[in-house]
Length: 97
Image (cartoon, rainbow, N blue to C red; front, top):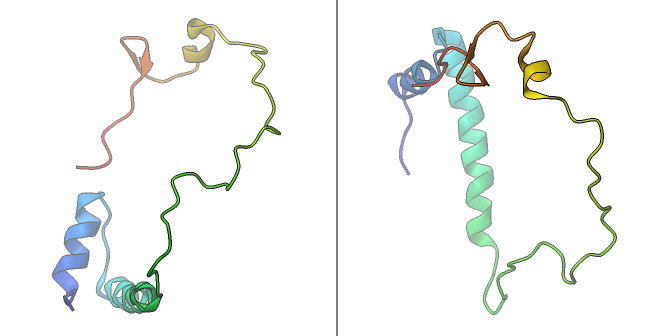
């Protein structure tokens, strides 16, 4: 099994522009170890002869409501409170590398 060290978690945090201290890295390592052990439990599940699901329900559902278009905002109204607008879209600073 691959080990995940302090540098690994700091690199991940840096990739989403977060700073983590040593205590937070230790907490992440412990949580990740627990998560990894739980995921490994799936390897023990016997799936021999089980047909894969391609749809989450056994039968197609017909009880979902119809979509009804109601109270549609114009683009101008939707963007009027945005701090920065570019090419008709809300512009936000990049937060992930």
